[in-house]
Length: 115
Image 1 (cartoon, rainbow, N blue to C red):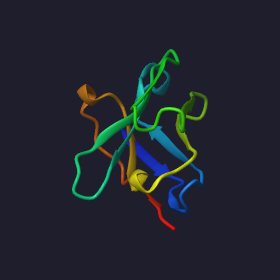
Image 2: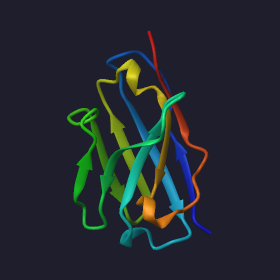
Image 3: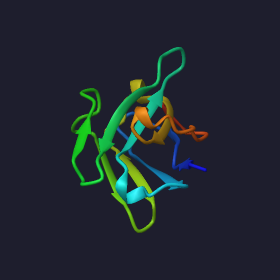
Image 4: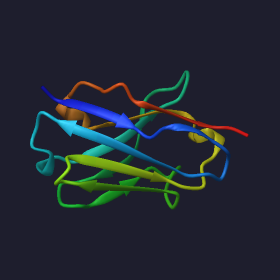
């Protein structure tokens, strides 16, 4: 079955950086667009970055210029490099395919930005 295992979260000060990783399995990774989503306490889950199977990339306005999504099809892994982190970036971060695929969610990785 489709599985996602996210890692790399932690506690960081404002202005700091983190690199998240997501190992995917159970589908043809190279053929699927991949997304990073996040969910802050009391808020809906939102998409922050997307990379298509062909490498086309898009970002939410809130993270544009600070976050970088990439993928390694040989490792079935998608990454999110997060720089210049802000307290409002605090959330649980998840990877998944496009919403129409309706794949199960992984456990996510917690990112906390605090001084």
